[in-house]
Length: 191
Ligand code: IMP
Ligand code: MG
Image (cartoon, rainbow, N blue to C red):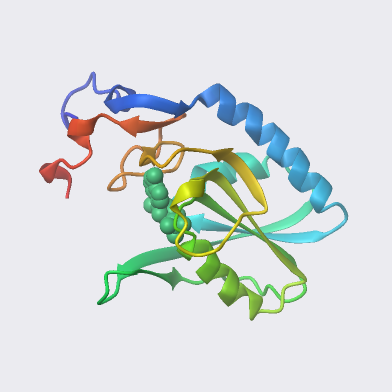
C-alpha cells in the first residue's frame, strides 16, 4: 500500500475474494426476511458490536420492517497472563434492555469469546429475549461453545478483511470480503 499514491486501490491488496459484493447484497435481503419473521410484532433492541459490525448493521437494519431501537458497544480484547483472549466492554450501551428483545450483531464469530462474553453480560439486564447475528462464522475456530442464531456465511479459517472487518483498522471500506496478499499480512510500517 502506498500512502501518497493517488492510484491506490485497496481492492488490489486482496489476494482472494471469499465473499463477493453481490453475494453479500443478496444474503442481506434473505437475512432481513429471517429477522423480520422472527421478530414480528416485537420491540427489538439491535446492539452492534463496533467497529467491526458497522457496515453490516448499517445495511442489515435497512432490510428490517420491525419496531426497533439501535445502540452500539465497543469491545477491546486483552491477553491475560496465560495469553488467553479476554474481551472487555469499553463503551457501554445507553439503552435499558429490560423487557426488550435483544439482537446482538457482530461481524464474525471466531473463537466465540466476544459474543459469549457480551451475551452473559446482557442476560443480567433482564431482556425479554436475547439472540445473536453474525455476518461470518468460522466454524472450526471455536474455543468456547457458542453458536449464533442468524449467520450470513460460513467461511474457512482464514484471516479476512472488508465489509467492516479490518486488519490494523484498515480495509473496512471494501465492499467484498477477502484474504490479504501474504506480503501485506504483517507489514511493520502499519503496526
Ligand atoms: P471471537 O474470537 O469470536 O471473540 O471474535 C473476536 C473478534 O475478532 C471479531 O469480532 C473480529 O473483530 C475479530 N476477528 C476474528 N476473525 C477475524 C478475521 O478473520 N478478520 C478480521 N477480524 C477478525
Ligand atoms: Mg476487529
